[in-house]
Amino acid sequence: MPPLFPERASTMATRVDALYFFLLALAVFFSLLIAGLIVYFAVKYRRRSPESVGAHIYGGLGLEVTWTVVPLLITMVIFVWGASVYFAMATPPEDTLNIYVVGKQWMWKFQHLDGQREIDELHVPSGRNVKLITTSEDVIHDFFVPAFRMKADVLPGRYVSLWFHPTKPGRYHIFCAEYCGTRHSGMTGEVVVMEPSDYQTWLSGGAPEGSLASAGEKLFQDLACITCHRADAQGRGPVLQGLFGKTVHLQNGETVTADEAYIRESILNPATKITAGFQPIMPTFQGLVSEEQVLELIEYVKSLGTQPQVEPPRAAPQGPAPGETTPVKK
Ligand code: CUA
Figure 1 (cartoon, rainbow, N blue to C red):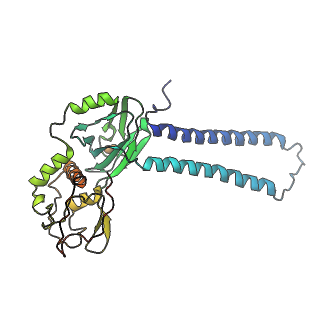
Figure 2: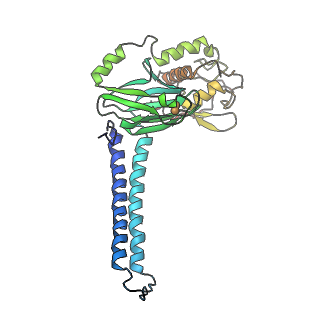
Figure 3: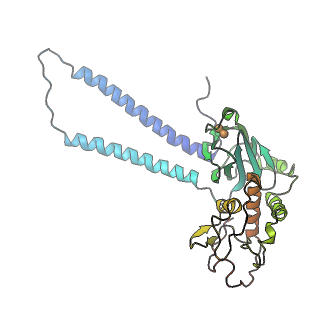
């Protein structure tokens, strides 16, 4: 007999299955109850002679209150339980191992912060919270790992985060769960969950290009970003040191949080959100950098946030307005 359920290999899998089995049990119970009562009543209240006429019944308050209140309570249980599982899934914990995922017709590309790159195979350690920051470089895909009960649309132009806590070493299928063209059904892969020590060995095995942030730093220099985005606040572009996670005041009076999506937009469509006090002079890098390179640049900007920062006195019209700092999350 084929297994009816995929393996449970993450903390969320147990919670999702518990809720699923509760719903299943509820559906089975009421289906049997209703079917049973139909048969029972059909027999009990059957027409016994051709002349018999059914009794007229005008309401029954007790019965009506019961069949209103009982389903209400049951659906509220489903709602609260479902919402708690949903929020747990949607909120990555603080201490995550972050990995970037780029979907592409028809493959999954993974970038580890240490610089390792993988295609259609993702190595992670068992027993750690792993956050995947996903995006697509063409159409909508959907990252689905049944063993983790984890599934989310992967969207072009946006970063969608999902997280899991793998509980046992093994190899688990990745599927694309959104029709994305001819070879959609072949857009599969495997998550390889390893013992932490094996994972360390695997990590040390190879990152020829150095960390993601260092690749971003090199790109930052190669693209000459550094000529305007100087650390001393004297450049023609905003200072990027310590930027990530902060609130940025814009020319049009609005504010925006400097997250991954904001940095990506600022690279590809720099004129959309101009920092207060700066001119819209930055050229677009659309077509000049790939999605992977955008991620490298984002990691570089993130890495600047953790470096000790010497705040030079700002020239009055330049630089973002003061009082804009919120603690940098890392
Ligand atoms: Cu990618 Cu279906």
